[in-house]
Length: 376
Image 1 (spheres, rainbow, N blue to C red):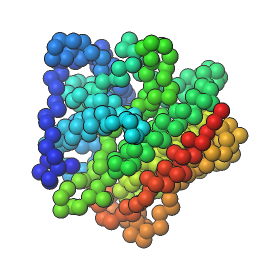
Image 2 (cartoon, one colour):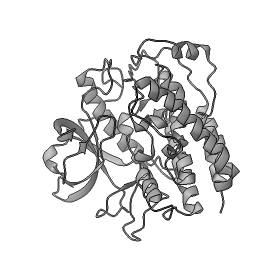
Image 3 (cartoon, rainbow, N blue to C red):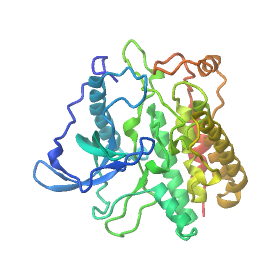
Image 4 (cartoon, rainbow, N blue to C red):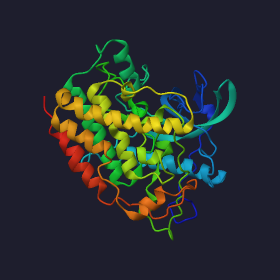
């Protein structure tokens, strides 16, 4: 949202980088892999030292052809912090948690990509009060990889898998109801912490990362009040593309809520406790070749859900995953088809795509309620 478009005014959320002590500067070997999430020490105003989780992103526009100005991107950082703070502190009596960490602000630092130094923006968040500050977080992807390495010995009980799946479904349902698109959900972005008292990893309490790349679903907003422009999305560039809706891979259309629902095929990974990438091989071929592979990948994952889930975790879980992979609804809007057939590069402007009204209701009944029926 734009500061000049009638949106509420947010404070400057920038924090001096001198207040953060980084053990190792963030590094990555390629622009197509995500930045690592750092555990750092933060010096508060009263000089207390507090553990913080830092998510990194580049300060510039993320995609080619973006028309968003640099000052506007800076304002969006403040808005991201404000939304994360508000979401993490929502009342939890009448509704389940959105599983979002409390972000205290952002700062600039230096990282490395392919050995070259570059400026980064870090968003710092407080871990939960019950989390052990001495032990780093663990992603779902890391847990799945460890299970493969150990021959499946680390696979949790069905009770824990069901609890995790239900918590994730509830969190995404709440975000869908608030018209907030995640855009980057994968097993890399699902984080867990160790309990300070029991010392066990809390699998039933996942937290969502990478909401830094999110945005409000502007198709429901009057353009006379808000001027919300998306940066767009370039796909076919890395391992995270396996979580992207095949329709988005084949067209320049706008990212929709059903695309976010499709990425929650991560439920399949939770059920089988192995990465979905195990179902097909990927290559580093030409861009068009990778698009074709993405379609094949989606087909194989869907077949795995139909063939394996009923025997592994039951029919209720299977029906929830299949509904999820289908994006809950088929798109039949004629204007949507015209947008998808547009050969021009997507510039982030809304042109009447399918608003998908009622999708959150489908998500509730076809996924959340199905998972609530699970018993061991």
